[in-house]
Length: 79
Image (cartoon, rainbow, N blue to C red):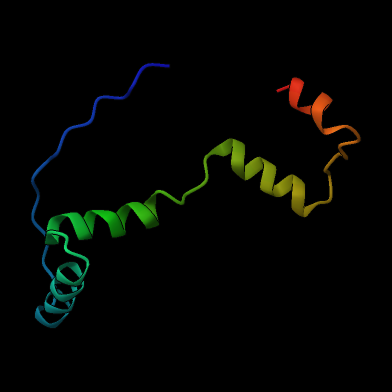
């Protein structure tokens, strides 16, 4: 599968002044730009949304519909 092209888009948000100051302090403490820090926070949250395949696997696990692996090497060969 080819690499997805990525580019930055400039946008504007409105934040509470006190919240923005706190975020600036956190960014500075981590030696990051405000933009980079906010981007990292968003990626951590949005990046954790499971895709359909993962959702299906989670549902199978919750329902106890998991198989057992008798031989790990043989199972790994099937992947």
